[in-house]
View 1 (cartoon, helix red, strand yellow):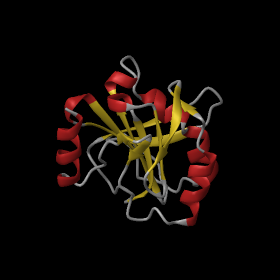
View 2 (view 1 turned 120 degrees about the vertical axis):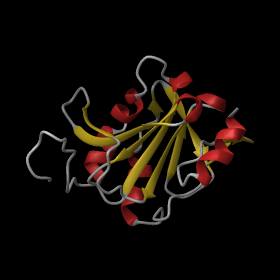
View 3 (view 1 turned 45 degrees about the vertical axis):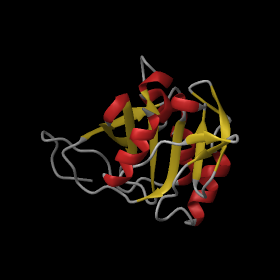
Length: 165
């Protein structure tokens, strides 16, 4: 099942979930993974996300937590999304730190969260099996490092909002 995700997602131009091989999670780097801000993001990433321990990854600008099919993966340096009709939501963590995320449900119950209005962009893949009740918990766990490292220059707006930010 995880192998089919790895084959399907890159073809769609999306993030591929990592596999744990010899203790290292195999993650393709984003096109701007060498951006200096990505080093700050990865160094500042928490030791745990959703209660899962951080694992070593194979590529620059990436971090992962958990293992096997329950691996949560973060990539810094992905292409910033433009205007979209996909769901965009502002998530606030327990400290009130807010980050806007575009949320897509991929095949096999995997959620893809991509920061909106921040450059470089960050994406986070969360298998539903890692967070059956609240996959957005992974994005919430990463709010501090995203907000601290990358300033927001735009925000989600909906059809009822005036103008765009």
